[in-house]
Length: 73
Image (cartoon, rainbow, N blue to C red; front, side, top):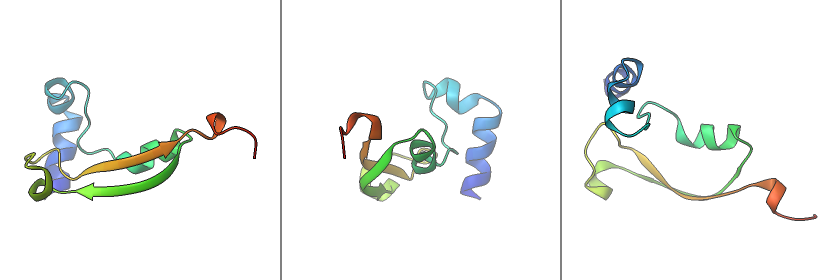
């Protein structure tokens, strides 16, 4: 049910407009990896953890490194 509502809010453009470009249905971690970053430590936060209401939960907090900026191996 949650994902259906998030998808609808994104597809209609309502949430991206309201949320300053945020896409609540997007798989954030997959998008970060697809952009070429390497994920480090990641915590997944729920509404109960953050106090931020649906539809923006869950959220992720962590680190990602750009391999191009890591220097020589």
